[in-house]
Image (cartoon, rainbow, N blue to C red):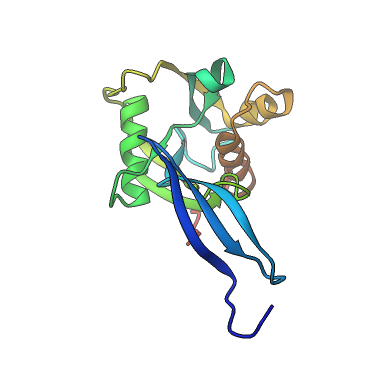
Length: 194
């Protein structure tokens, strides 16, 4: 690479703009000095929530899963509540909103677990992951394309569901395994700045 040449985007062209995603073709200079075109799916990001009905330190706390119809998966998929960030919305506010809209429950407290890229090879989508405690039942506000029902499951059972292939959604696998590894039986987990 020549001195003065910076790694990163050289130029970008919007190939598609949709309701949920956009697709850009970016010309990029790589760390080895070469350059090339990459198709990048642009996404505003999302928040996902592991909703705990019981305290983290219970022997086997219950959590709420949703079972939602997903066209891309050709059927129903077990998931944790999640949704796209609205313009200017903070991840924690999105987590509270999505939990309430999809399950009807509101949370007294959201604990930040982590933030991760879903598929950094072709998208900039990041999911902000939270655990919810102090749940209070309410009324859900589903969108027309949200066809789902709720399932209360012990956390240990969700790990078995991942192992058996019953839970196949990536964000849910990350959220449930993270919760089982780092929160379960922790007296008062500290938020992760993620």
